Image (tube, rainbow, N blue to C red; front, top):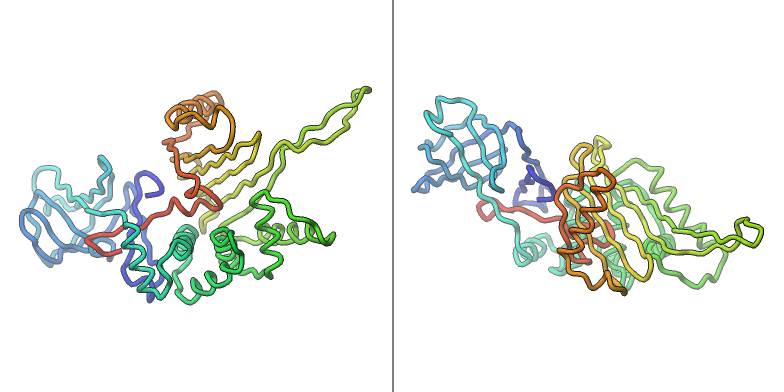
Length: 341
């Protein structure tokens, strides 16, 4: 789950139906249908149209259906029937059992979609899920084939190609190449004077088109002063990019920050629910004493910085660098109910 109090349920036939996702949150009303009795208080059922495993202390009858309210208790998804006649006395809580899909299961799914079972295909699938794109195996293969042209930057290229598709934009290979250099903070030998302009044009097209992602590259500059006290020499201290992900209602879902500063690489991914931060993931790598601190110390230090700014960071977690790079689509996961994804 990317945020507390919510779980995305997925149907199995992703290749035919696309990512048919419904998010269950605290207070959501859903339709529950009991399909079969497996004994010992365990049942097969359907919640919001998706087959699940149910556990209930109260007897349920196959064939019956009822509306229920979703809640989360101790990390477990609970549905409580609204009709008290169904549950009799007691809490009447029914537990939904779900499991995070393993890499092996995800690779099996990729093969069923006609995609090579590797990390690049997995990244494309996660990027689609992150943006709420319908899963189209033909589109996924097209993006994969284009991304393979950018040796060493395939994952980043796939994310850019996916967001361009989501916004209905097109870009040639040179434009994408220059954008990748910009976003990854790399310098390329300028063979012509228009490459910087090429980067800016594509960034402007992305940010001026409504859609999921907006990209805001930045530089940290220090200006020295001459003997007269006026600004003089310009010194580049660091650079990076802020990436903002919005949902279809234009609500901020995710804020990612990457920054190279003082020989260290800083990566942050903040998950939002409404206007509140619910989760903060981060990673610091590179040279220096701070890079030698263990994650627990870094988490404590980061909490102190948030507190000093009177900001509630939600739950703070250390994450591997590979999960946070780019759009941080590596944090996305798939959930299965009763063996179905």
